[in-house]
Each structure stands twice: as structure tokens, then as C-alpha cells.
Image 1 (cartoon, rainbow, N blue to C red):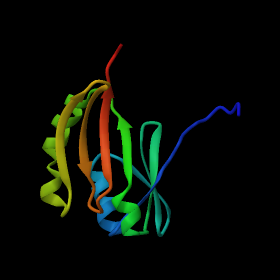
Image 2 (image 1 turned 120 degrees about the vertical axis):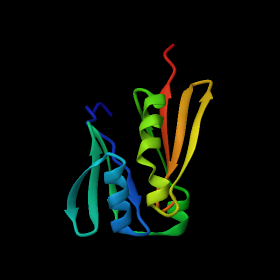
Image 3 (image 1 turned 60 degrees about the horizontal axis):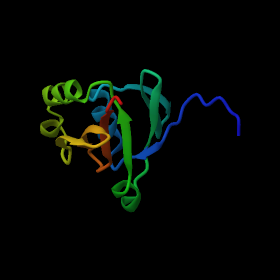
Length: 122
């Protein structure tokens, strides 16, 4: 296929839709309400759909990788937000350095695992 792709947007479920909406707004995403059970959350030119849908096996196996410009700065900003004290089930895993770059992790209130990473410049 020879298409000019503009974006890719995963669908993410939520155990408690309203709590997850607040969490993602607090994380810095802009919310666009599309319907009573679906929102687009975006930052810059990237985004994802949050659904008012919960299937435990699906959520427990959902991971999203978001590339950031500077994972160290992202981690510092994340610490200031202190989302684990505001949302039950949210937890952070600190930066780890791998052969491809660095990443840190955030589990959202439903259990979705977010990887925030920065690739090494080679």
C-alpha cells in the first residue's frame, strides 16, 4: 500500500470511564468528547480513544508506547503530578536504560500499562 498515513490511534478501555478521563487530563492530554462513551485524548499530533468499555483480559494486556523527546524531563514532570496519590491503582516504574534507549512506565487507573520512552540517537 502506498498511503500517506496521518495518525494511528489505539482504542483503550476504562474500568471507570470518569476516573480515567480525569486521569488522562491530569496527565496532560487534551480531551475531545466524541460521544457519551468515547473520547479522543491527544497531545500534539498523537492521540488515542478512551472507551467506556471494560473487559478485564483486554485491559490487563493493553500496553501503549509513547515516544517522548526527553524521558528524564518527562519523569521529573510525572513526579510533580503525583498521580498515584490521586488515583487508586496508578503506579509508576522509574526510568530504565536499555540498548535501544530509556523508558519509564505508568499504570493507569484501569491497569493499562503505558511506556514512555526515548530512543538513543545513533
